[in-house]
Length: 76
Length: 219
Image (cartoon, chains in turn yellow, red):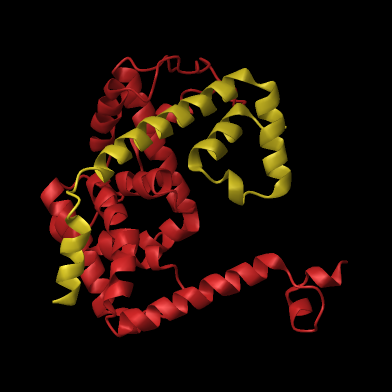
């Protein structure tokens, strides 16, 4: 049986998709039963969502002529 | 065993695997694009710029560079890529190659190697949240506030700015650009395991920082 520490470490390191099937199943089983680890996972997801919002702001930052400027530099 | 599912089945005339066909098409398109890029074909250059310039800019901003620096870095990364395209064998993803150049340029601009401390005090903070059997001592509480608000964005921005630069880069590439751990390990020349450690530290530091700002009920 995996502990809360094992599960939250696997969630937080982002290594779950690469983990062996047995381990992945172990994590899903634990999450299904443990609301504390589900809360932890939701915290991690909330950080991700807030960060993606920030990323969209960055994406809108350079002027629309940015790409044209880069192409011109590549062709010069 | 289902023989038709093996890669060799394609050659022996057995039913084709649609996934393999798709991968072959993508590789063919890429090879064609590479040939055109080597000739400095304007349309191919435009394609590569449209696909990657803004993404590189965004990543540079996420790594803590100013708007002007980020514009320069994104441009420099693309120029270097085109200048060194004869060395690019097409085996790696173009984006991985470009992010690698961006990382290198970013370090040059900072005029120092990103320090990677083997021991980070955040590890002890994380450890202290569990008892000897690995159970939560003070269980975390799921966030109940809207994280997509402007206020949340400003809070996370402040917290990310406080991260050690290498952790910040890993967070940017893994979380925002959604690169795989394997791709980020190539970009930053670190092991896949260490990328996981750095991602974990970046997340736990952000979590502790957000807690300090009253953004969640964290243990």
